[in-house]
Image 1: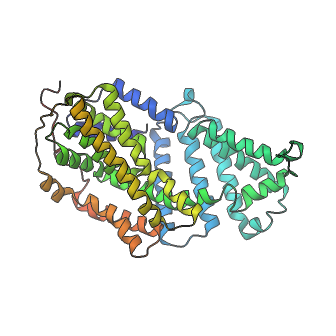
Image 2: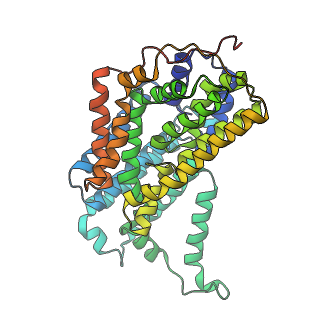
Image 3: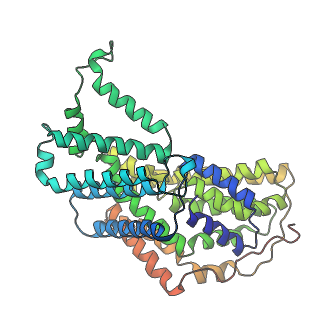
Length: 427
């Protein structure tokens, strides 16, 4: 879990007067690391360097969304940024956490070299993909190894292992039995395809990552730092509180509001769990039932528009259909999913005799919406821009601008007081 996620959980918990148990936070961090990989927390000059590179990367992709950047350059620069950050933020193993070792710096330098070599090669670089030079093959092999190592650090061994099997299959075809045998491909053919064209490492997944995924990530960061996360939770508390099913309904609604823009089930579950678990416990939910409801609500993030856990962009690109069509097709199953969760909450309330949780109301739903309802504008802007004919890239770019402009008058946009206080006698 990053420092930003840690800080966000503490801020939301403090906003709702909930004490965050450090042991519980450590346990949550363990779950997140198992899902997303262990990360370094860097401070001092190195920490500022990483932040500066991340900010520059964000600005570059925002510029690329508005201006015209050649496809080959955009994908290569994107991969260079990602490799640079991965080797600094993801340790070689857990015992080397929170420090950057010499081999990490070697990987960083090699990442810059192989990407820079491809960029400087220009059109000649791609034109000789069928007959790569010895230097091309050296850099191509290095890039392949760097990508495999970056994938291992970020996601574990499964993905790199599968990739290695496919590479081995391409090279060992003549030695395999029927029906798997084929003529085989040597290193020069593999390097030419993987490194020197837009069909291998720089293929469709990187195209989606360097355009849509990175822009939605930036958009989600804007929402987070503008206070939208706190508003969505407070809005859910205000809209659903006051009944014995209010606690469960709040989890379902806030999961939908938080999960849609973020696309991360883990982040949604952890953020909500820190704030809402005391309320669920007070309402009569056991640990397993409360954890199941929080996990089910967070899981909906990967099927909820507009992000769908980054799957929507890949679906649209591979099937060659409009991204707006993907969103429309995902709307019905998303509504059915959360409607089923609402029904489950209602059934559990009657089956297990859930209690009404008394909450001290400090803001009405109308007043809260009037003060902070601008956070909904950017969500609607994405759909509106696409209906007006904008591409998905342009739509999320302008939605990010809308989020920035709408939240600017509110300063840091931190909610001055939470809509609900801690349940009475929650201790």
